[in-house]
Each structure stands twice: as C-alpha cells, then as structure tokens.
Length: 336
Image (cartoon, rainbow, N blue to C red; front, side):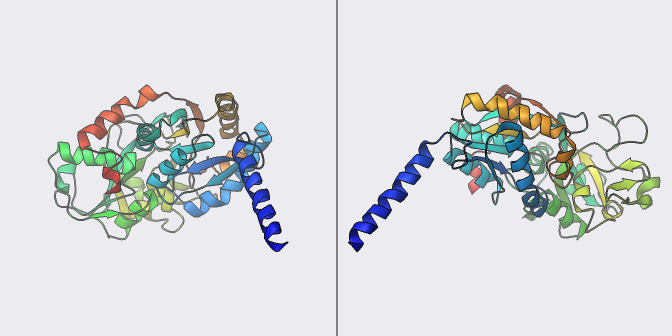
C-alpha cells in the first residue's frame, strides 16, 4: 500500500508539473518572468520587484515574477532557457548577444528625460593629473561587467582606437561599484553610464561639458529629497548612484570624457513569447512608466531611471553589432 501511495503521489506531482508547463504564460501557476540586469542598486531593485509585479498584474490581468539574476550573462542565459515566457530588461550589447544566442526580440527602449540615447563616461579622481583619454596609458581600469555596453564595449573600442593599453582591470560588478572604485582610489579610471544633467535653464546639449561647472563643485550635495544637486544642476550620471553613501562623490570624482551616443537599454522578449501578449504588456509598461508609482521602482535613479519608453527594432542595434565584431566580442569571449 505504501508503495502504491508513493506512485500515486509521484503521478499527481508529475501531472501538476505537466499542467504548469502547458499553461499559457501569465496565469497564476505560470507567471511571466521579468528579469532585470544587476547594473545598479540591487537591494533597491529587489525591493521594487513586488511593486512592479502588482502594477503589471493590475494593468493586464496577467501574473508576473520579477527577479534579478547575478550577472548580465546569467540574464541572457535565463531568457534563452525559458523561451516562451520571459521578459528581460537588458542593455544594447546584452540584447545583441541574446538575439545572437537564441533570437530574443526587442520591444521597448527606455527614454530618460527626453533622451533615447546615453553615453559612456570616463571617471577619474578630481585631483588626478589626467586631462585627456590619451593620458590613461597603463592606468588601472574599473568597469561594471564585460557584457555592459557603456561600461565595457564602448570604452574598450575607444581605448583600442587610441592605441591605449590599460594596466590592471577590475570587473567591479555594476555601475555604482565602478564609480566607487575611483572614489576609493582602487582604480585610476572607471567607466559607467552618463545621463545628461538637468540644468536650471535650457537643456544640456551634445558638445556641452559633461561635468558640473567648477564654481559649483563645492556646492554639490543631497537636497531634502535625497537628490544629488550642484547648485541648481541635478546630477543624473552614474555618480548619483552612490550619492547616499558618498554625497561628496562629485567633489571627489570628475568626468574626463564621453563616448559617442549609445542606444538606450531595452525591454526585450524571449524568442517564443506569445505575440498576442506583447502589445498588451508594452502598453502597460509605457503607462506604468508615465505614472507616479513608477517613481518608487523602475523610474527611480536608484533603479534604471526611465522617464518614458518607446518601441525599438532589431535594426537599431546594427551599429552595436559592428562594434562588437570589431572588438571580437561574442558569446564565447564574454565567458572567458
């Protein structure tokens, strides 16, 4: 009898697992997986995950499960391992790698304060002697992750174009950590994302100085809402990601240079994601990004700091593909 009960229990569990696998993505027993790369404040991202799940559920009637994999590569691997039910918030190079690996498709791209592009910033100690990128020959370089578009791909290409050889390298684990490595003088140069500052009058333009005016540096600090300001300038680049633990980050770390424009990060779909659900979810995400609730999660500068979202297409990443090819970056090389 005991053996029979064990067999019956096994059959019940097996039938439940089979039913879950056959269930349509988005039902309670098979929630849609939503993955965020761990590029910024992971603890803040984890805390906001449940709020995002609830908001998307209320907007669509579908069920979601948010998680933050341990790395960019792990995010890509999980999207490909669950081809029918996964959404990934991944940067341009991560998308290109995922598309190459298993046919992941783009849906939306972020917009930040009117910009649908961003840049790499090269960060050095404010009192360092570095004045140009050429001065960085032999410098210790801290970058977020080898699969980071702004943190690794673009700066690596620029170093190569200039014929520069870096000294020691530090894979810091995220953009805040790359900034922190320069702040703590563990690296001579750090590379991370640059988002344009908000100015008291007018808008920042390409070609303007990326850093805060010298006369305002000593005025930098947190306002009553915990935002990083220098006078009336609001700092939105990666330095702001460590503002709470290092409110004097602008006094200690300056921007040496910027890269060219980079396509913003994406919300992408696993290769066999149901077409009938994509539009519904994209509309819900666009509406959510436009809501006050988003300020506590995805739209917060401790998360991804989205202020809007818009459709994006595979051909928008052709330039990234060319750069990756020139650098010899592929699925195989990022795992080395």
